[in-house]
Image 1: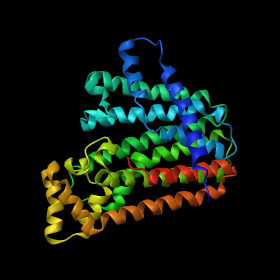
Image 2: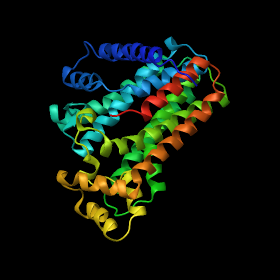
Image 3: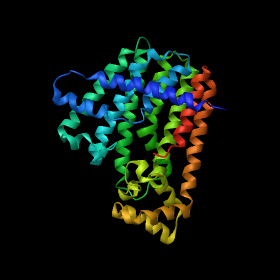
Length: 330
């Protein structure tokens, strides 16, 4: 398939510009400033805007009109930012997208309240586009919030466990990441007038794309350039996180190599000076290649679902997006 990358990139930038404009204007003039200024700060922090773009593409791919889903597209980005605010609090993160996290710029209570308000604002935006199938749309949206919370809880539970089966890790990343991309595609397709077969195909595309996206994140953490990545390379190892690469390494290693990996768990992380040592260990064990194969597996599964979507340009855009995401360097 030959994809017109230049035109698709222009389409992406144009549509994300529309979402940014909506988010920039959403809270202007609202009171009290003590609530809405922090909400605006997080919403205007940039990012790929992947999730709202998935809403737009899914609507287009089933023959819907983009103008009918802009509010819903903004809603999923607002919801995503709620998860980031609360994730940063739980992880005690100082930076997000090169800026101070909300609880660091303001304070903990302000960040919690702003995050709570973002959920309500997300529903408010979603309902503006819900002319029919309201019950189904709200149910899909709500279930994604439940899944994200469950995934975050599992992720925190993993911190106290020495080993985690890879299958269990995949359940966690489905809930924490892929459930949200699945929801975006479901909402876009349903608002775009999809039938049951088309709705299922769009949802599956989102789910498998989300799985590939998260494992790619795990891989980039150890392979990307720090300047491009925007954070410390190897931060997952420094923080002792159980990523796909780490768990695959545990599964494949033995003797001294396994002892080195277990040490990461026992110490709850490593020193930055040890990153190169562990990168070389990952290379030796072949886990970087394993991760690349896993990313391609999920990407191909996402592609398989596109044939069930009726609009050719929408399908091609979804194919282009997946290729862009798996070849990204940040």
